[in-house]
Image: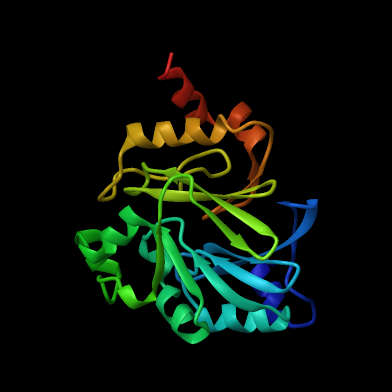
Length: 241
């Protein structure tokens, strides 16, 4: 039974991922709830602050489910974070932002990909053009966002797409389709670049210490596990020697 099934059962509350967040007061327990959405069953995450304000990472579809899930948790959706602008990660983005009034964030390059959609986006998106009125901020490497006590750091990760973003929050990395458990995202789609992806893997794995890695598909992992066992991470470092 998956996380979405647990939620829809309604006999249990949505399953929470244990995580820690950094604040001015030190470490606190974060609330992160995963749910699979859309026809590709993308991993979407609801991250809650102590004040029960929520950021939604990659609403790939089923915005009504996400709104209902937030309601079940007693949370208000304030922020939508996009790791990259492929259809399976943004399918519910527009409707979710319109319905909740949440602020929308993605990198400049990913937003630009929606402004000037190529064949890949035109094939899958009903609307290949970004509604500028919904976009709160175009993110750059090193930008820092806040959700109440939580600090969200933007790490630019090109390769799978022109400029995907990983989001670092406390001891957790939301890596989108850059880094998975045991593998990486494909680079054969428009805007993909293998060498850039290798550089993004090194950037993530060069972060000091260990992190819980929450990817866009498949199960969670840790950064240390991927440093040790992911063959593509090993390849990324071999290519630098």
